[in-house]
Image (cartoon, rainbow, N blue to C red; front, side):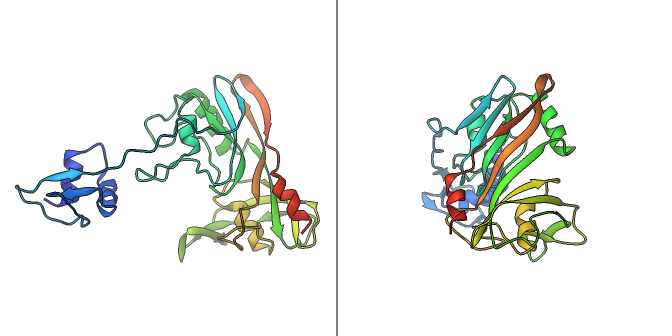
Length: 274
């Protein structure tokens, strides 16, 4: 039997693909020796043992809470924090790890409490659901575009207009599947931008996405010639991505419409003076 098939059969709680990653990471031993080939054929006399590191504890790590009740939790996500884990081999602290302490929703997945996400490099307002009923209410609003989002960004250069709607479809880049681009055959995408402050080299803008395409704000601003500062994918790398989710307007249980806000980081204002 192949090593990866053996592992998946005897430890079925972990997927075969995850076992393949663990083998390549040197966490599986055959007869006391690390084996990094998933295709290794085992004989009846071979002994397989595991050296899987203990997951790092995140119990002492916190995130700044903006609002919390029995149905929702709202945080100001710091830049650099993932919304949820990328997989079994990734045990870094995520928003989902934090939500797990409070929620009953999606507890059997790697996305407890998660109803939407912010990119790792984006900071700001993020809401989580604490039960199934609330999750359905929030997700329905996101999918039907009933949620109003407001972002603040620093862009390189000066947009042609002080205020405009960027209405350009977005699709995946076939040459780089992890990236997106303006594509006439892509999905409809609209972004409203407004100039907030003029600088010599960098400018502060308010962005309001009318749709929720992956990387939408970053793709649209780069396409019109003013990429978001620090965007290492669609622009030029810097100390951070200067994109912040400043406000989120949404209806929470009992029909209450709320606007949650997170102050724009001070480094954004500092960029205006450069």
